Length: 327
Image 1 (tube, rainbow, N blue to C red):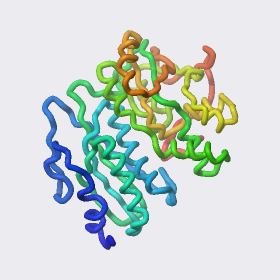
Image 2: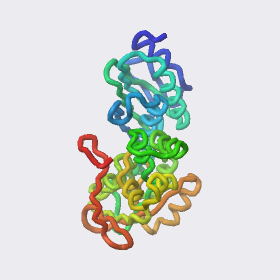
Image 3: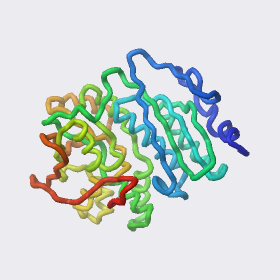
Image 4: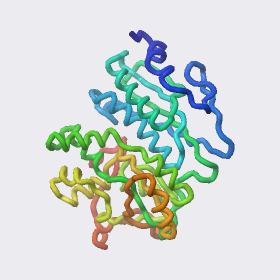
C-alpha cells in the first residue's frame, strides 16, 4: 500500500514501461536524459487538466488519464511531430489507490500505443490536477505551424466535429438521450484519437495546422491571425456524425453550431494549397482518417461563415477558461 510520494512513484509509475533506445536516464534522478537524433527538432507542449474545470471530480479516472495524455499528444500531431517522451505532475488530495490504479493503467496503455515513455515528473498533495509535458521529434524544417496559410489555400478538418460538446452536455445532464447514444457521445468526449499519423503525413504538404481544442470557430482564427489572412468557412461542409444529428433531434443548424463551437475535439485543422490536393489525397490514404474541406483562405482578417453562399451572422464563440461561453 502506498503511504507517501515515493511509494506512489515506485508502485504506480516507475518500471511500468520498456525503455526507449533514446532514453539515457529516466525516473529516479533530478532530471531525465535523452538522445536527440541529428537533424531533428524537439517539439514540446505542456497542458494542465484541473478537476472541476476539465473534468468532474467523480469522473472515471481511466477516462481522465486518457483525456490528459491524448490532448497533449494531439498538440504534437498538430506540429507534425512523432511523440517520444512525457513528464507527469500529479496533484492528489489524498493517496487513493482505487483512483490511481485505473488512472495509471489507462495512462500507460495509451502511452505504449504511441511509443511514449514516461521519463519523470512530480507528485504533490492538493486539489486534483494533472499537468503533462510531452516531447516529440520532427525533422528540421518540416514542423507544421500556424503561420504559413496563403490566400487561396483550402481549409480542412479531420474526423467529425461537435461530438465532444454533445458528450459534455450529457455528462452535465444538460440533455437526455437513450443509453446507447449517451455512451457513444460521452466516450467521444473523453477518448479522442490524436491524429499523429495525419500530422506526420502532412509534412511538406500542409501550409498551416493546429489541433481543435477550443472549437474550430476559435482555433481557425489563430491560423488567420498568425498567417495574416482571413478564413472563410462553409457551414454546410462541416462534418457531422449521425450521433450528433440524433442528439440534436435532426436539427442541422444546431448540429452545425455545436460543430463550430465544440472544444476538446482534438481533431486537426489545416490549410493546404489547391495544387496539393492530389498529394494530400495520396498522403492521407494510408491513415484511414476522414478529412473534409470546409472552406478556404481569403484576403483580409477575421472569420467569415457562409451558408448556401451567403454570410451567416450567428453569434458564436469557442471555449475560454476565463470567459463564460455558450459551451
